[in-house]
Amino acid sequence: MRRIATALIVLVVLGHLAFMVIEMLFWDHPFGRRLFGMTPEQSAASAVLAFNQGLYNGFLAAGLAWGLWRDRLDLKVFFLACVIVAGIVGGLTAKPSIVLSQALPAALALAAVLAARRRT
Image (cartoon, rainbow, N blue to C red; front, side):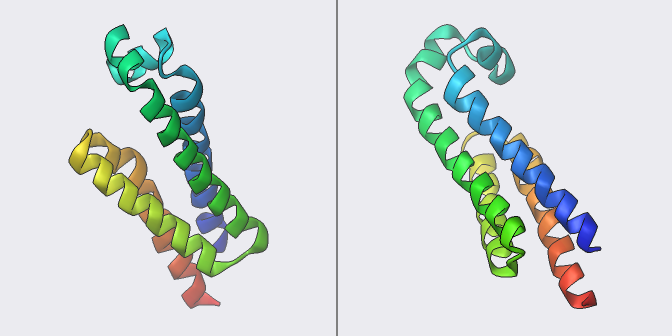
């Protein structure tokens, strides 16, 4: 179960690194507009906000990577909980599918982390 938990956290980290790159570097480019279904005017108007959001996603990825590197349960639980809350808020305020793409993977990883803890 520990390997499954680690693999799920790695997937969450990679996902948030991808979000970071897209939001910080490709938001106001054809790829970002196509991915998020925006017009050039929409992406230009929200580019600064997306850049900031990308930075936060990078912090979440860094925190989870730190938890893996140090093998710290408290860090893993804290940062996975942050991702879950961010995913739920994003789903309620921006786009419902964010719950599936962000909160669900983190919730599965958190469940695996807690299950692995019980078995040791």
